[in-house]
Amino acid sequence: MKITNLVHASVAAISLFAPLADARAQRRTRYVRRNVVANQTTGNTLIPVVVGGAQDVYVPNIVHAAVGDVVQFQFSNGNHTVTESEESEGCKPLQAKDPSAVHNGHIPFLDGQVEVGTFSIVVQSTKPMFLYCATGPHCQTGQVMIINPKDDVQLANYAKLSQSTEASVDGLHVAGGIVGKIALEKAAFVPAPPEEEE
Image (cartoon, rainbow, N blue to C red; front, side):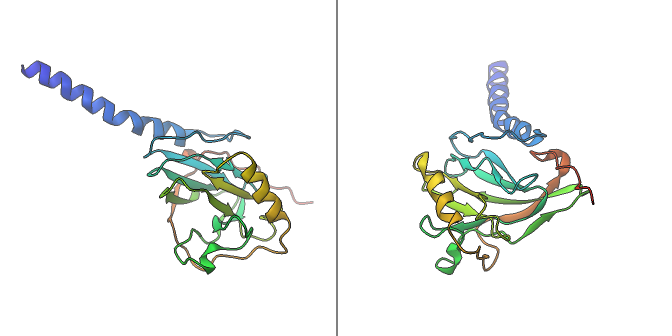
């Protein structure tokens, strides 16, 4: 009887650590795959999104997440934000109407850094969440993304709307997530090489 209970306890313990091991493996990824859409999950999954780098983009720019999943934005080369907007108002912060809307402030990544700035949000709903970078013209040049889009066309429409705006408007204050840091070797990207001076 004691051996049977020990076996059941061991199997239960192993099944508890399997999702943790999978999340750790995702964080160890040291490159970015372009044109990848994060698959829909069942909750409590860490979903890394690379912000910036060699181009001013979010990778992936479409994420399907369950309630309870954590989307962790990892800031690569440059200075970027993750700022929530309405679908009908590209490059303008939703914080003007809803003070709790997502905005992380500006998080830079400079050549030689050994830590990566992060902004982690817990997904609260499966409704679409529209995000853009409020740094300079990044939003107008395509640094936009959607968490849980209703269809494949929604991102294209949001990007087109954002391109037509005059300027990006910054968020008002940090809200909707947690600003943090991780070691560079745990990031989901390899930094772009330093730019050579001419």
